[in-house]
Image 1 (cartoon, one colour):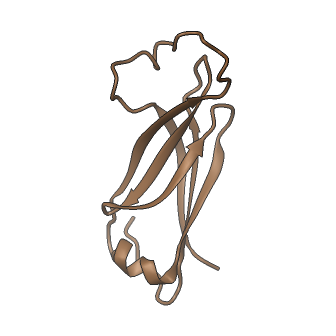
Image 2 (image 1 turned 30 degrees about the vertical axis):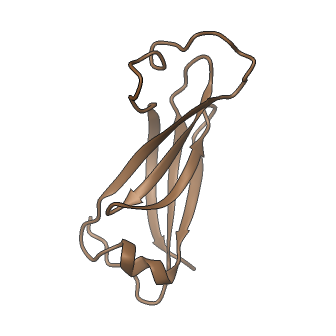
Length: 115
């Protein structure tokens, strides 16, 4: 669906996400880019999906969003163990080759005019 950015209003973006459940549990830091510009970073927990929100202020909407189709990109910025004392090696997902992004489940992306 194409977007028609609101005139004179910001945009609220809510991403529902969680880190891939694996032992040992980790949180995953992800960034959200719109048309190549980062609009926010989030920490996705492993326990349950959460709503992660960012507000794009009115003065940034025109620089970031365009009428029509926009490209949303999720960027992986790494992980952190929930329990830093847990020294078990990563499970099959975490032991993949270095440099591969950590899997994060994205359940929903909602974009609405700011109230």
